[in-house]
Length: 349
Image 1 (tube, rainbow, N blue to C red):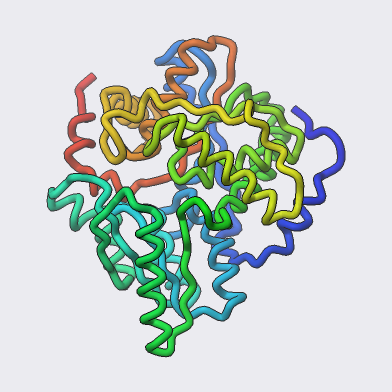
Image 2 (tube, rainbow, N blue to C red):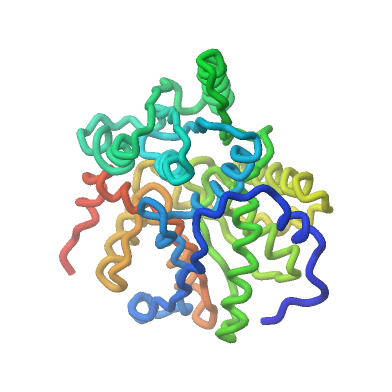
């Protein structure tokens, strides 16, 4: 696979965006030989963004570099973010804040009906507390605009105390700054594929907030790389998610001052593994957890990566000659926060 044509000038715009360098790591791109043999279909590979070196890693490290770049440029001393109780984004924002000598206020939304001790006190919640984040609660887990508005209210209170806050907005309608991390990651992935002479036929990634999915797709198309990218829905159905990805793509184009290279036909979504809903693992996701652990010693979480891997496995079964790249976006602490779901996947071979 070769990148065709000159490098798009949008990458020059990306290079001058404020960025807090939280990692210099190029994550591994590895074959999943054992899992491939077990499935008997397409060859499976994994991009190990779960190994990014900040507080147990994950894709949000790449996204946070650009959010914190803006925060530092604004001379902020405090960062605010909202997310689910077991949010990986929240945990890594708290970690990045500590790394950059800033304070962090996190707002935990009630997205999942789970009152277990593990969900409330272990996993990402434990790490939030260990990292010293100030924790707030938000009762409605399906009100993005309300969650962002509540963060703004907290930020206003902090201004009254003499603080300089920066709010990380995750709802549609705000610039998708974090997506820039995966526009940049597209360069890394393409370089790895070219250096290893690996011709990938499809990339599969979890599609939740949509920032990773859209940023990667946008970056590949800027590079004139036409590998299909399938987003496996983990929070919304395909119809709702399509609108979100399309909006993010337009937002990235505005951020980089370029035309949007993402066509409607590029937005590929699979919501067959979404049920029984966000933060809940269905049978296919539980099987993916078990298969990844047993055959690759790879840990995937029931919220994001198990569903995405289930999608990758399903595609691989129907494409004997393909080569599928699964983007492992992390979520390792959620293995402990969702202990009940993980135990359900502990099936003897």
